Length: 577
Image 1 (cartoon, rainbow, N blue to C red):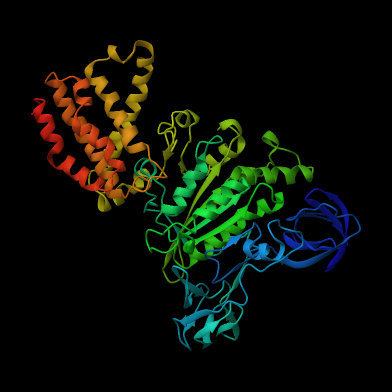
Image 2 (image 1 turned 180 degrees about the horizontal axis):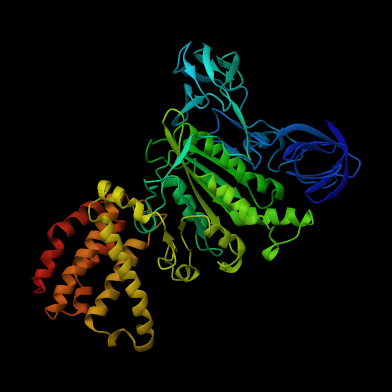
């Protein structure tokens, strides 16, 4: 196999070389500065390489070197709390070498080779092990890192050690093969597992509209499409902060630098509600901003997914946020045009849907050899130009994902956040989660959720009549529907991400909100039958108290007292028995 050749042609991030005979997706070092690239096309004796760094100044005739290896992620202790670029170079380490701006041709390993980790074996000499078996543990920030037998290795433990080691030290020997704490895995291929199972447990996010009306499961896939400024990034940051996944992988794929800066500055300061330690202790950030080379953006989602799969294999629930898949698709479109491929719809490559499917299909809840389960839940933000949800990336994503959280510019204009439209959003997991909600929240929770959705649907129908004749022309019963649905919107659906109480609602509190609104509706209907006007009901003290409760520190006690008798007592004073 020829390992050295020379550059034949340069077209932006796409370089054509000759004189080497690599395989598809092999990593190639391009030019005098040894810029990192990947083989994406082979035509006869010509090889087309996408380069992950800026190619300014690279000229035909410069050397290229074939490494013979695909693009791999380094997996082992030290990943959590790290900030990487799209090809897993640690950005803080690069910054110490070159300052605030990334220079070309600088390489740094994904895992620190000098750091020592305390390894404690969980198996002993003579034990039989197979690929994926946990052979030891390492304390890593706020989680226990489980060291596993790499894929493709099985046999008997010949030797295993205890103590402090670096990631490249041998900690065990399995049938003559040395095992280190570090594994390497090609990012474009999913890690092996035994079988996938149907997800049956919701990913609790603390965001009321998501958990109660449009739930995502552990191992599920969701999309947040929306126009600029509707709150995609804030919603994803809320999911990263508050979801009950043990590990969070946040991919800033082609996002603006200031948005990534916000994530980088807020996450280390945030306290993890589960452990009390910094949230960064269970988070991996991949920062590939819009001013970084476009080809690395294409690789960043695969790198992030591989890191997520590694922690899934340990038996953890992982939440992966991709912000945004539209920028990833734009990178594919740019590379495709440089390759002079036949364009598909709106210039995107014909294989756009296939690539999106490959990415989202790597999510799921899986079972490994010893029966342990792990999951990856993927939430992809989509940024359609002008908020047009009929464009190819949004449509391609919607065919694959099972949860759709539609952000709405009109809600943003009304300052209603999160600006998720409850009429166009959906979750295909709702029915399969009813059993979980009945067992873990309340027996009547699914009924309450269905009632809430019906009420909001009725309000949408009535709004059309109100625009024609005004609300005064409506009968009292329909006026009450508008009043109660307004309470649902303002008390339940609106949520302040920056308020210390309202930013997170546990499931028990979400149930109390819905229960109190339903009770208010039932009492109010009886009051109307007793000739009490909706205007009188709207001015009740208990209604005002209910609406203001969500910003109070003692919100749970307020809701308990309203449900426990306060509501009934005030309605009795109106003459409604």
